[in-house]
Amino acid sequence: MPHILADSLTIEFPLYHMAARSLKKRILSRSPLRLREDESHRVVVSALRDLNFRIDRGERVALVGHNGAGKTTLLRTLAGVYEPVGGRLEVAGLIGSLIDPSAGMDQESTGRENIVLRGLYRGLSEAESEAMAEEVGAFSGLGEFLDVPVRTYSAGMQVRLSFAMATMIEPEVLLMDEWFLAGDAAFMEKAREKLARLVGSADILVLATHDMAVVREWCTRAIRLEAGRVVADGPVEEVLEEA
Ligand SMILES: Nc1ncnc2c1ncn2[C@@H]1O[C@H](COP(=O)(O)OP(=O)(O)OP(=O)(O)O)[C@@H](O)[C@H]1O
Image 1 (cartoon, rainbow, N blue to C red):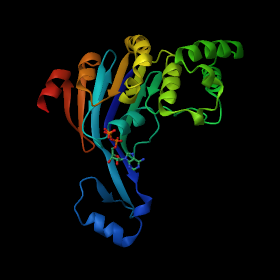
Image 2: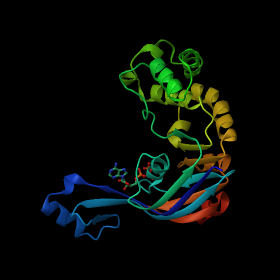
Image 3: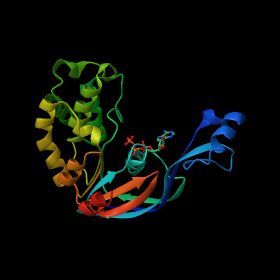
């Protein structure tokens, strides 16, 4: 049964360029909230601190909070990009991730080649993957750019391609950063219907956003992060009211 379980989940990032003694001293002397020196004498950022929550089938969860609160770090951790340094995380279910537009894409390959590769990786035959590339490519609206290396794409073009590629599967656990709701208007009009279908067929949605209208439209529960900690968790209206 698809679910997510975080038990004292902790994520830290070492800041290697802070190795210089004087700089380290200066930073740590300000009694920072999220920077500390670890056992190996490195300065580390506490990105997520001791998170405890469980998300079950049918829940659509918004991650809200100010810049740097830890929303994207949590999404990436759920997607398996970062390993917890403490605690435990369990994510059961097929994950679909709309977090970083260029993640999982080979920059030197064309858009079409990337779609074919994803198809093959998902176990489709070559012919099926090629057919998928036609369909997904058409939806992306990239036109002739579908056959150009992805590294030359604009940010918006990358979003279009990764969005179109995400619709290739029906994930059980859909992880999404608000980036993906911010494509250009013409594309988003077309994408909205697909997105609604993707969200509707997913068992769990976790969406990080600053847009409270989006939270109210898409989500049933909200988790508010502040400086890497969970400060509120509950029904959307309750959590938004508390802010
Ligand atoms: N790769 C990294 N290396 C070092 N520190 C990082 C890294 N990624 C994130 N951080 C730090 O972790 C904290 C949480 O960042 P995160 O990007 O998760 O916040 P956010 O809530 O998504 O913010 P925003 O709303 O601005 O996107 C910040 O203090 C940030 O500086």
